[in-house]
Image 1 (cartoon, rainbow, N blue to C red):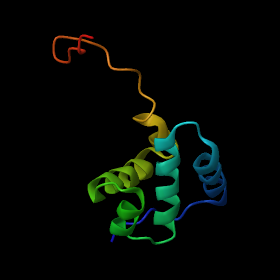
Image 2 (cartoon, one colour; image 1 turned 120 degrees about the horizontal axis):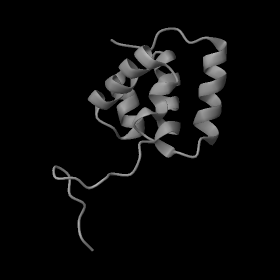
Image 3 (cartoon, helix red, strand yellow; image 1 turned 180 degrees about the vertical axis):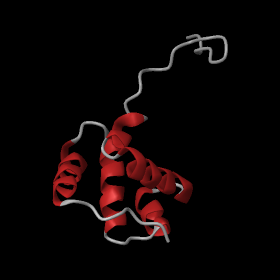
Image 4 (cartoon, rainbow, N blue to C red; image 1 turned 180 degrees about the horizontal axis):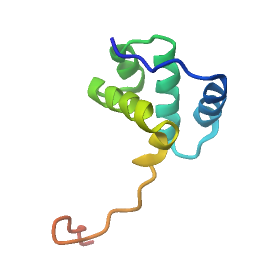
Length: 92
């Protein structure tokens, strides 16, 4: 079973604060998932808690292991979609 590697006390403090007060709900969810994984919650347990696919939780953990704190906001705070030839925005 894949779990987050051991978290430092500083990481736990930062993740806990993000989990409680970050303005983006997805960032809060990811921070909480990382903490739960570090406490040996299994992927399936975390996916049920957050109503996410297990593959999504695995991705969050893998990105955390690679990018750390940056991984939490990476996709959650990307700019609004821009219209282009491959991704046209719907007309009102």
